[in-house]
Amino acid sequence: MKKTYPIEVDCAACALKMERAAGETEGVAAAGVNFMAQKMTVEFAEGSEPGETMKRVLKACRKVEPDCSIDF
Image (cartoon, rainbow, N blue to C red; front, side, top):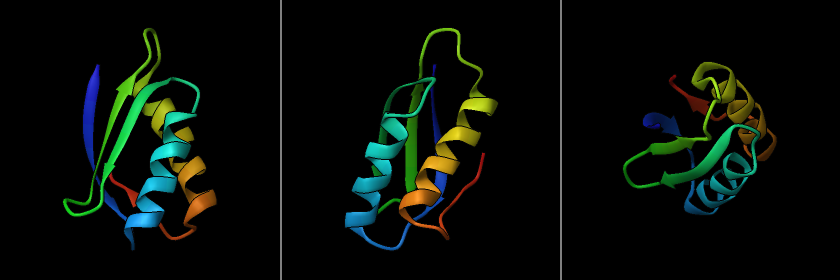
């Protein structure tokens, strides 16, 4: 399953770092961040629970940019 979420990110470099952090998160098969559109697309791994996975994604992204927000 693939979902797109509004995200607040300050710069393109941070967006790339957040994309990498999200992609390495347990339960995520693939992730992409579009800085210009302020959107994050997450493809969930088979059998993962999107709500719990997004909590882990947010935690990983906040290590990169502490004030980021993802509306999920």
